[in-house]
Image (cartoon, rainbow over all chains, first blue to last red; front, side, top):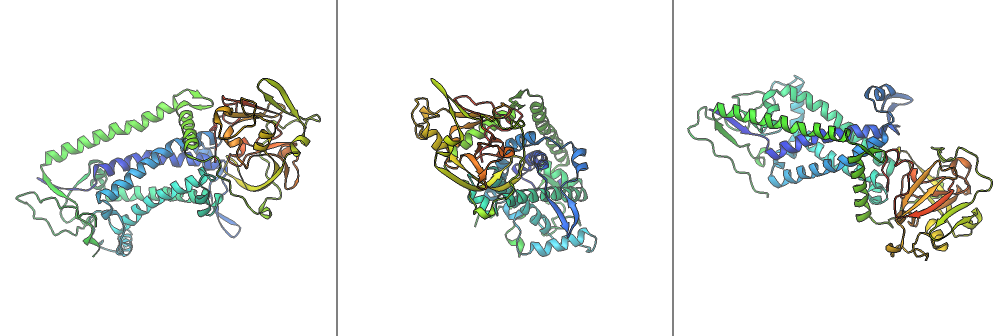
Length: 246
Length: 266
């Protein structure tokens, strides 16, 4: 017998894997659109630290002169992005899954300890149930960023119809910049996420497909707050009931 | 404790063979599901073009237009700015349709159903009440600029000359059955042309503009008369209007033919 822990509900796995190609299309088509007017850069005094983006970058990716195509992809797949995101948020809160996701007052301290552990500066990481503090902050932020992308997106898509929103976000130009910064955030998240998933290993990765993880005893990568399970339980442990929404 | 509200994850004991079977099942399904985005991509990129862009895209863009026209108001106003904030040198971004000198004998031609075309001079336009607007001009490329334009309201113009209606009466936004669905405009050389839904044309901030920053419009900005339509991207703001006509079919549109959305309503 193997003891498995049911980690990711089926709905969450669908939302996650639908979001992956859809967000990719949104970022890629966003780049095709951004190319047509690409003024953003990070400067220190008169020195340009990072330019978004150098010509070689565009050329290498085949971006130039594809604005119309980019807008078409963007304005078609935005619906899927919004629908999937909305379904994810509704599910997360209605199912109680939010209890694993929303950071609490300990999450920030925990996140620092996790970071130190990841950097090899700490021998153990604090115990956690599903996500550690750093994960909670990261995944919850991503959800908020999605909301932000939709709001800033509408502020630049329909600045007359949503003029109150555009004004609230600091104007049309500001909303476009905010929309861009959020996208840079997704890209940074993506690289860290991939790195961490590789680090965490196969058992963790496959759980985003299968939904479950086989429990290894005394796994330092996954310290559990649960007391050590009896090695050979006679009966399956009853499934803990999810507390009702308080 | 933080964990007090976070429930433990459910666990169960299953035979190793079942673990293996579930793993194979899940990954099999995952591989099948992964074929869907690949299929969607292949379907889109192998679709024929419809008016300058892949057919599925054109259909969704047209559907987006329907959403906008159904749920959004035609009278929401574009935000305006104090005149001091207007750019002193407004940006010029396109020369299609205005590469030749302004015709000496320029007149605005308006085609009418069951009537001779109306030929108007710039003074005829200037005889209508003058309106000024300082707003953020938005280019489809992404840049925007606060600009100060002056001219006659297109709605006043249509009303005064009884244009845009099938009956030949002054058009009213309420009597949509009598209105043509679109107004088409083109430059004298027909090098640039746009089609605009009649609701946006009759928006109170849509101008037949002849002044920029209080001065007559210069040639690169579309002298002697151009369209300023703040509820659309710059591409619809046709310069040097030569001819205007009304239709229930979408008039040809320069950038829509090149793959852009036709409506581009903001």
